[in-house]
Image 1 (cartoon, rainbow, N blue to C red):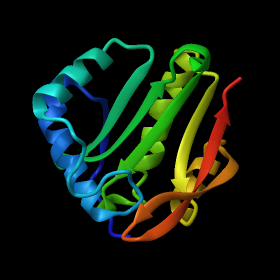
Image 2: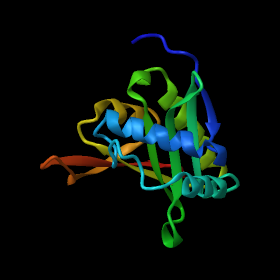
Image 3: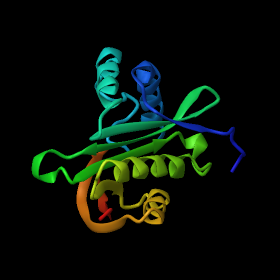
Image 4: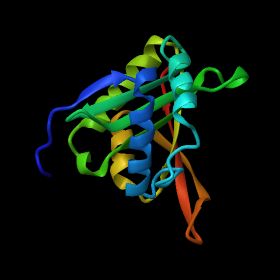
Length: 171
């Protein structure tokens, strides 16, 4: 891999909304591993700004960004489940393809796990394409284990894609 510029991890802030939405469109166009494509997520800048503003002081939801050369190169989020599942959180992560292997995903994972410990999460769940071995290795490195395979989780261009459901027990 080519040596990349150093990166920095920050908590997402309301003023990052436009850059984050642009990043999501970019990363969505680079891989079929995410639940969205080059269209990004269905939020406008105002809605994303409000969403990030609520997260700033939250103990239930957080989003971290990896930055290099003045641009977002990765993001990771953790969202606490409601009610009887409030001991659990749902995790998601993405990194721009040009920065795969530079350590940004591990740094984002470390930030998420620190937030989870600090805020009393007992379990973290995630879903990953069963053929995304690079991501699965990352998750296993940080203590996640496969619970089961969900067949036909995605349907992409007429093809069914299986996903593994993974869990990290924090108790």
